[in-house]
Length: 229
Image (cartoon, rainbow, N blue to C red; front, side, top):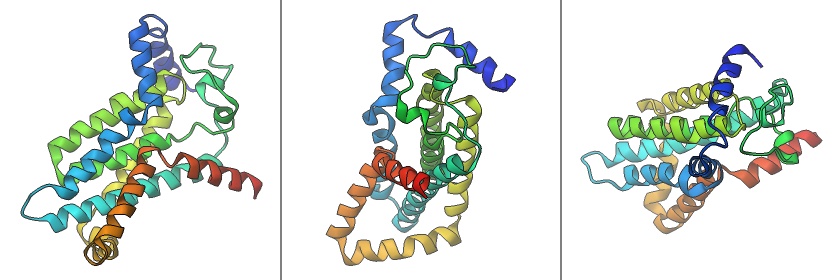
C-alpha cells in the first residue's frame, strides 16, 4: 500500500466504531441500493421527462450517459481482471486495521482496482452535469462524498481505486456525450422510443434496475466466465 492510500485510510479508520449511528449510516451507503443507485437513476429519468425547449438534446444525453455508465462498468471489470490483483483493504493483512465491513470469500476474490462503483456513478453524474450543470455538480458531490467515500471508509477500496475509477467514468461520459457522437449513439434508441413506446419504456425500466443494482448478477457471471477461460 502506498503512502497516499495509507495516510487517508488510517485517518478515516480512526472514526470507525466510535459512533454507532454514524457507522450504520456509512454501512447503509455500501449496502442499500435505495441510497446508492435510486437517487442517481431518478435524476436521469427527470432529465428524460423534464419540460424544456430541447427534449431531443436531453434524451440524447440520457441515452449516451447510460451507454457510458455501462461501458465504464465493463471497462472496470476488464481492468480488474487484466491488471495485477490488488487485495481490498479489509482483506489485506498488511493494512493492519479493523474495518466496519468484514471480508467474505466473494470480496477476497475481486480485485480492488479500479472502483467500478466510482466509474459508473461518476459517469452518471457527469451526464447529469452535461444536461443540467448545477444539479449535476450536486450529483457528482453525492457520488464522490457519499457513495465512493463510504466504500473507502468500510475497507472496500483504497483512495486511488476511487480516484482512478472516478476519472475513468467522467472521461468516458464526457467523450460519449459530445454532441456529434451522442446523436449517433442515441439515434437507434430514440427511433425505438417513437416506434415502440411501450416496449422501449419496459426496456428502460429493466436497464434502470440494472444500473441501480450495479448489474451485480451480470458482473458475477461475467467474472466467473473470465476466470474459467
